[in-house]
Length: 126
Image (cartoon, rainbow, N blue to C red; front, side, top):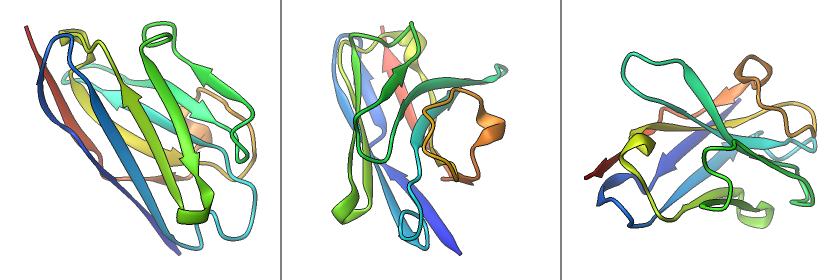
């Protein structure tokens, strides 16, 4: 029993910034130490890893394409995960999904994540 809900997506010009939020409810984050992550999927493309963070925030993992531009963080007291996106590029355009897994490993494989949000659209114009 649980739910992840993303918010914060929208339309932004290249070079701009957005902050995505992921709110968890139910049993998610309540019983075990769960790593969380962000993935994205553009039309006609595979679902790609963006960033992951351990339960305590000590370990992070970023895709090479976003490293230095995006920052993942979390606030467990409020059951929130964030993705700060700076210097956005048109190739960042995608639906962004929040996900959590049942172990505290910052992996990049979507099949290892159990809980998923419905996604939020990010569109970056040239």
